[in-house]
Image (cartoon, rainbow, N blue to C red; front, side, top):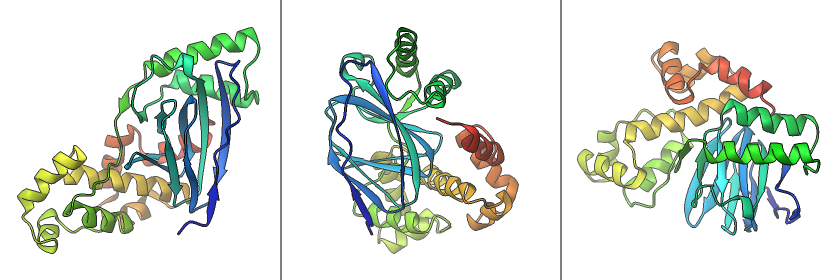
Length: 263
């Protein structure tokens, strides 16, 4: 249920290579459909950012970034409190960026440049030195690895009710075979639909969902052991292994990095 609706800012700085913004939103906040004449990278500091573009949903937990090309209509609805920063790039300098919306992985160099601007409270770079640093930042962004989506959704008649149920309860351990019986189809059919509609297996999708949920629990201060138990893992080490496979670091390191990283 939406508690708050917002209209995205239309303020721009056409004479600058880029400009920055920082926003913190409450749970159940919706940004209405809008578009910018600049490119936008949304860096998620805490929470989970959910973006809707042309019927497709893009999900980014903290530590990930979303890229939105210029003139692309988008909206967002965030179920949980979310803190994010945006890098807004003049359209002229977006030519080397991806043509379609996607998720970006950001390197430590990119983080360091972004952190420099925010620590100095520079939202609109103006000096010659900072303009050069902006160009370096754009060069870095153009070289970052990308993912087309992190947690895709589907309107498929078989998959849609399953994915919705799992998002309501990420700890659900119902097997694919059991889900097949519930939606009156076969396990093989569901497996094929997952690969076709989601671009991944059912197991990988559920693992990603649990990772997103675990990030939220980490930010709430829950212990790794309790999170593993809440998510239905047989042991803490099994949960840590899953987390490390996705994030590249342990849950505790991720928590520390998320709280310290000022991007």
